[in-house]
Image (cartoon, rainbow, N blue to C red; front, side):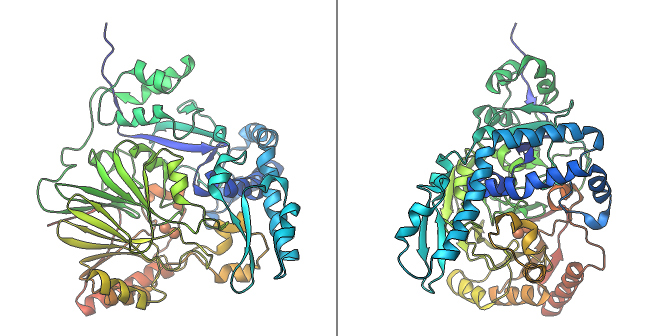
Length: 527
Ligand SMILES: [Fe+2]
Ligand SMILES: [Fe+2]
């Protein structure tokens, strides 16, 4: 008897995990992952084991939303204890590597005094051999450059840390991804496979093309006792939306946060994919609204709400290429997005400022991205001009209008913009919120608070619109959609500075005759 044909249910979600923590760039890229494990994740789990009640109370306090508190019930503390023991035993090499990075940075600070650096190489910790180059900048400041492709080939990159947890979107906010490890659940299918596993590509292809339970079971190496959980993810009928392609003209759809889908009959471009899968909800586009083939995915920067693995991993096999900004190739705070995504099995194009990437009937131009990275030397960030179906669209994400003259140069090259999409998170998190585990010298709280992950305020957004000659301006990427709390953990009130600044900006646009809106959830433009 032939097996019945099955499709993936539209509300399947995947949580990619490393040592049970939700994976993002800084917990996967080997150097940064070691530091996050040693200096953030392990100490946080140990703090939880000291007093689970304190963590529970903090997680219940809305004022501490987005803090580093482990949201695991005390009754499951034993499982957290086992996780800690496993990390200490199986990741001893990574923990030592993180200490070696600190030691090497200290060595450089103490001994690199403007003279020949050659004598320092033998003094570097053995873990870093072959992986770093020492250099001075032209101001005579010593720096350590990490040769990241080597790090990915070294024992610091352990693919067996990776696993995935597959389940059905329950419509209930998941715990904050940066703080809470995912423990096994009877409702979820946990698989000890790396993110680049071919079986995952097959699984998600079953959104479009039917397969069989037997075929998927084999492709994913699902153990017998977990086949029931796999079967729960499947259904008999496809659920792709009928209007996911366009027949004529152009269309943009806003999927929430920083995710836009730009379409013509010939092509589709998707920005910062982060898409909800809750089919019980209304007022939002879902994964089944994506076209079958996406020519280009463009990623603006490496923050965990812009490269979102739970969405991007589902697109493998149906994306022409993922466009990312080329990183600085070696700065500790600036791991390569290209290497990261290639190791997930995605095709990548790395772009520098003003590089063009063509697609049928249009092109994407990478343009500079100012600010929003707490004044760290990070180049892995880009804004984009997308020309599609006769329109020019500026995708600004979290970039800041800190120096509006930059946008004058862009316009001189690329002409005026029709639609500008701008983020206005103008009072972002402080430096240490995201980068603490990578800092090799302490910073004071005052320093950290002065260096925020902030985008444009009203004045800066207005200056961008003026310089770009934008006819329409849309505020997006504010993390306000209720379904993305597990990633963003934002908590605006109507009085929040950011929302007040958006009001000021919208009033300014009205005065200047610029069509403008504050986007939330879902929106469509057609022409
Ligand atoms: Fe950001
Ligand atoms: Fe963001």
